[in-house]
Image (cartoon, rainbow, N blue to C red; front, side):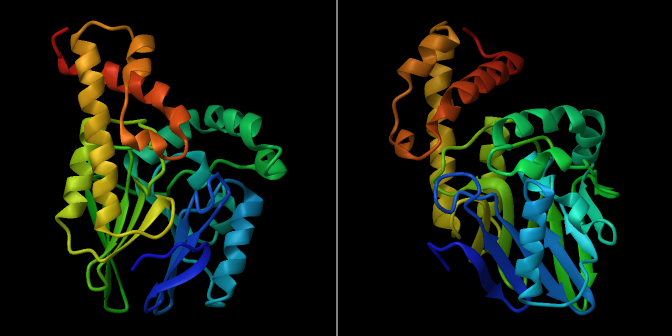
Amino acid sequence: MVHSETGLIEIGPGIWAVIMSIIPPEGGGPNAGFIVTGDHVLVIDSLMSPSLGQRLTKHLRQVTDKVPTYLINTHEHGDHVFGNQVFSPPATIIGHENVRSVLLSQGEAMLKPYIDRYSSLVPDIKDTTVLPPQITYRKHMVLHFDGRAIELIHPGIAHTHGDTMVYLPEEKILFSGDILFNHIFPVIRGSSAGWIAAIELAEAMDIETIVPGHGFMATKKELGDLKGCLIELRTQVKECFVQGLPVEQAIKKIDMPYLRWPRTERLGPDVETIYDELLKEGAVR
């Protein structure tokens, strides 16, 4: 199932994606979703500010009048969690243990750059109260509601240190969080090698429909496209690293078709991240 549209999209029985254009380009996300099952409503990500969380609530009201019981944070980045206060309470927030620790220790510091960058777009971002998950898990958690299994999977350090993929095995649906940027240049805050491994984990799963963290609805084909981008980027950066080039020269040398995707201003920070990775891996220069 592939859509090139934004807004509320029903993707399965009681399952909706919300594709947003808050961050360019059109359909650039951040995205969210809902699962309505029995007496429970699960919200997946809360967007970037209280007002955007309220916009998400209006979408939810189009499909149910039930009160959200759980909110799943797919990772700790502000564009996915700074709307938490709109849903909790009464909803209980679930996320990876690293999301809780990061939001507790760095949440207020993380908020400031979002205010600096996005206050003209969402003025109320300054009113954000940073709320961490109240329930955490380490590797894998399964929620069982009304005969439906909802799996929370931490694929290891990838886009961040606390990524969660939300998998509905019966429906073959994956809410990937930022494990998938759909034809949008990725930003690496965890590990490029780990991210490639995370994508391979998802590719091995029985999936037909993917709700990406950013970009339009997707399939495994788009997941593979991102893997190709990360493999090519890591390969070229490693070549520069082995040659002993400084980061600034490496950035200028990178040449690949994925640089036609939007948001390539992320290339520089990504090269720096991969250089740090290679140093830690003990790569020879």
